[in-house]
Image (tube, rainbow over all chains, first blue to last red; front, top):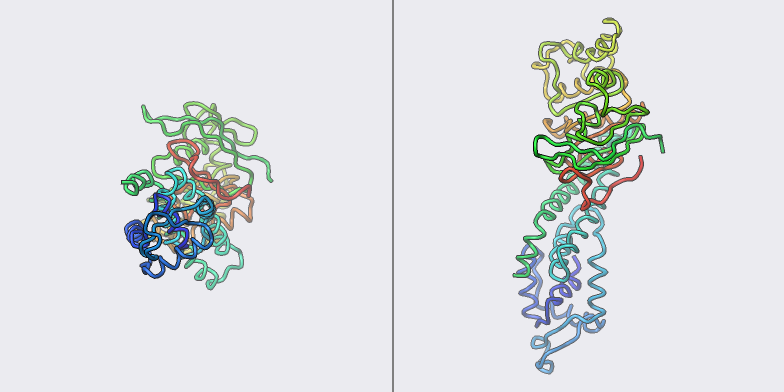
Length: 178
Length: 230
């Protein structure tokens, strides 16, 4: 999962202090790896250095924890590019996919989230097909089958998650914007 | 790409007031393995039944090679099914009173083969599919996986140009299902048999070279195509 992009996405709803940003992260992505405050401030500093967020508000001089940040145009473009990328169809990308769906709903709309899920599904399904072809090859050994199976079953779990999530996009959008 | 073997144009079909197919177009090439996917109730089984000539669509065309299936009589479609098509359903649907070899030999006997040659072909298919032991056993004495491989042998025994499989592994555990699908795909590739594989399961669909996703009786605009021409 890309923490800088997730933070950009959370800021796209409006400027936040580091403290509120960390809270927004934990609320929107409750199952994600916990984010330390230090990591939030360090990431914000890097994003500011790269021109992807700008310091805003009246407390700018009071220190990093008192500074609110807003997404810049360059930040919006970076976020858009990230939402446009699919995750490599390998096992264990679940948290990155979840982050992309939630951020797409926050920063864009249901169409964006559905579009991402459709493209991610196609990539996963294509990979699943390649791995299945390994199993049906005329000279496939039991070793080939056992190795392919592990990846196949994980990809299938991701595909089921995508299918369920696609069916929940509209309700999730409502919840995220409540 | 191989020539088109089976095609559908603007297929519509309803059960009473409930539409099952709402304008499906489809082309399947000779030797191509195509998965038809979608949630339950999306119309995928109805599509299979129309393509296999088991039912006549309310409107639209189904074409097999140079002939139209949708306007032929049940008797004519049945003749075609016996020689050109093989079908495999979720629950093998073997004749309970007949041992495995006689179940497998049935399509050949119906097509006019001699009893002796039909029996020999049936046993050789059962052997090829690893269920030679099922030849003399009744379906009730076989495991689910053995029954389904027996049903697969019956679907293949006439050397059909197309095999229609509707959730063929839906009732099997995953290893038994894998055996059925692996054999189906290997034999189809060897003999240039086209396969129409109806499933709601991504793992099963992945055995196909191409996927057609349905939703509410039509191509699903939200599912991007996976795989190109086989």
